Image (cartoon, rainbow, N blue to C red):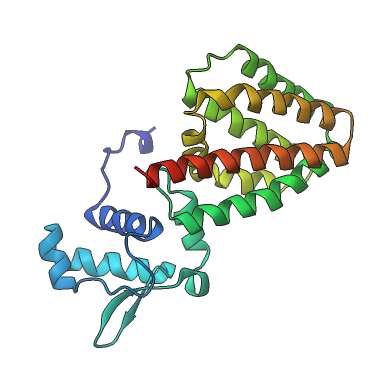
Length: 244
């Protein structure tokens, strides 16, 4: 009880600094190879002390987002070469704004590779409890109001997560759940288009039946169709925003 009653604290200035620069790099505002302002300039521009700036830059360097070059300063790294699991954690925890286009496309590619295999294994290994959990989501989808995009987004994620649980693989659900924030960030934009909701929910029910009946090939084809449909509409929405 004593631990629960400890004072509530807000993020430190260093945490805010790190979060802001992670956002700038993940959205492509700062490009690979770009030199950041000096610690002194950042301190003046942001209105924080140099120790805050220095500590924040050291954290970003540890994650592989930037590198510190002698007589040059902080430079944005190519995190594909220098990144670690810490960068992946920053990516999957990023839940607002626009993700860099190439990064978003990479996530879509990874999702297809991962979730298609989940659908196949779910059709092969599902249990009665797995099917009951999937059916409960299908029933909720039939009764939800189309305009409730937040709840639709959550149900969509839960459906895909329950499929990962039905694989029988202990790691797949953990991987899926770790991507919840960035997944719902992207799919939330997709579900703002009310015309896609009925199509998605219908596809969910067909996939559920394929998994229930143990039809692995059909489950694979349906999952591919669902993901391609989402990718097509997401990219169309992105292109329309770029054209504005």
